[in-house]
Structure formats: structure tokens, C-alpha cells
Length: 152
Image (cartoon, rainbow, N blue to C red; front, side, top):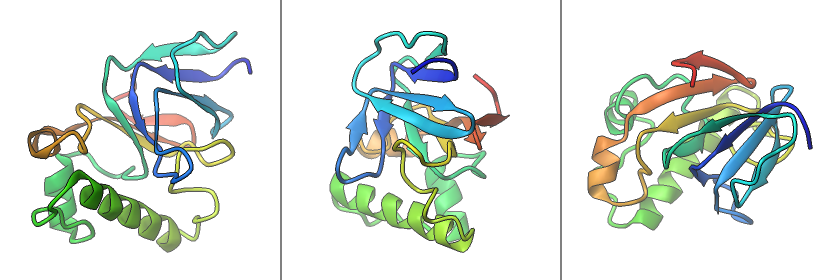
């Protein structure tokens, strides 16, 4: 692996049941080239240390607090979720539904190699607990491997 953008030092919520959490993502040519567990350097890649922030696929039009955006859009209702697992399930369903509406389900909605690099960087992991969910703010948005909101 070489070149691209290496997002490291993160809680990466892949929404992929085979690998739900990782620590880093390599983006090359607008797609996810690798999802990694550690912060080992990737030769030739530009490294961005996310300092513990959370990375989620989708939500690429979110520019507000995640819960507020979700409630306003009525696409993701979280106020009655009883566990982190329930929040995760609802987030996964909302991301998958958005990918289907965009006719892009085969290439969007999860963070794994070969998928489109459409992701959001949040200030906190929304699955870490109720306080983190309420406080999670969008810090950056990437679509097709390019920063479109607050480049990091």
C-alpha cells in the first residue's frame, strides 16, 4: 500500500459485521484501500492523526450535531435507544437506507476496502454512551475521497 490519505488514531466504526471497529483507514483514489487495526505508517501516504475522533461511513450531508440532524430528518431516531448495540443497529440501518436511496448501496454504507470513501469524522464515538452521543459533532466530511466540509 502506498500513497493516499491515511486517517489514523481513530475509533473507526466500519458498520461491517465482519469487522465492526478498527483504528485507521487508508483512502486512495476515492475509495477505501484498507481498514487497519493500528497506526503503523503507510509508505507514501499523507497521515492525518484524528486524536481519538470517530469515523463513520455515510452521513455526508451532516453539518450539525448528529442527534439533532437525525431527529430533524426523521431518518434516525435515537432518543429511545436502550443500548449502544441498539444505537449501532439504527445507525447502520440509516446509513444503508441512504446508500440505497442514492442507488449506491453496493459501493457505500460501510468502511471496507473497495467501498467509496464517503465518511464523516465525529468529535466523539456516538456508541461510547449517552453523553458521547449527545456531544458528537461533525468535524469533517469526505465524499469520494475528497474533503467537502472542514478538511483535516
